[in-house]
Amino acid sequence: MSKAGRLVVLVSGSGTNLQALLDATADPSYGAAVVAVGADREGIEGLARAERAGVPTFVERLKDHPTRAGWDAALAARIAEHKPDLVVCAGFMKILGAPTLEAFPVVNTHPALLPSFPGAHGVRDALAHGVKVTGCTVMLADAGVDTGPIIAQEAVRVFDGDDEASLHERIKTVERGLLVDTVGRMVREGWTVTGRTVRIGK
Ligand code: GAR
Image 1: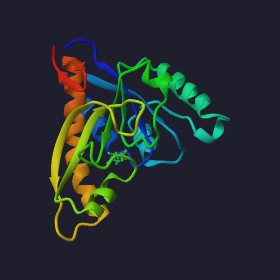
Image 2: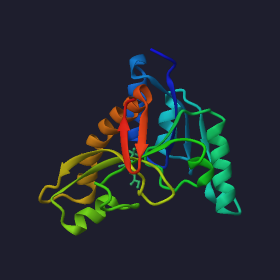
Image 3: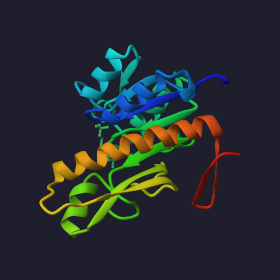
C-alpha cells in the first residue's frame, strides 16, 4: 500500500461522520489517515472525538474575523498547515470560500438526494415536501450551497410517522457508510471530473 492519503475533516456538530472516518482509518488498508480536524466553533462533540483519537484540532470562528474574506483566508491557512490530499466537510455548516476551494479538493456530505433539498435543513425540507424516498449525497464542494458535482448517493425510505430526528438518524446510518466508502475509494483509486460527472478510478 502506498502512503496513506491525508484527510483534514471539518465539523460543526456531533461528528458521527467524523467518527466513522476515524474508525475506518484505523485499518491501514483503508489508505487514508485523518491528520487534523477543524471546526468553526468550540465545545462540540466533533472536536472531542478528534481529541480522544489523538488527532490535532483547530478552530477558526467567523466572529473572530472582521470580514468573511479574512475568515476564508485564515481557515485555508489552518487547513494548509496539515498538507491534506483531501478535505472532508462532515457536517461543517459553512460555505467554504475560494482560498480553500482553490487549494484543495473538498468532499461534502448532505442528508438529502441533491439537487433536492440543499441547505442547512435538508431533512426537514424533504419531510415538509412529503417525499416518500430521500437519502444522502456525497459531492465535491464548490462555491454554491450543495451544488457541486455528485460523487455518490444512496436512498432512504421515509416512513409514516417519521419526524425530522428519526428520519435524520436513519439517513445518518446510511450516510456514514457512504462517506467512508466514497472517501476511501477516492483516496485509493483517484478520481476524474468531466463536466458534472465524477468517476472514481483511473
Ligand atoms: C450530517 O447528516 C450531514 O450530512 C449534515 O449534518 C449532519 C452531521 O452529522 N450536513 C448538512 O446538513 C450540510 N448541509 P454528524 O455531525 O453527526 O456527522
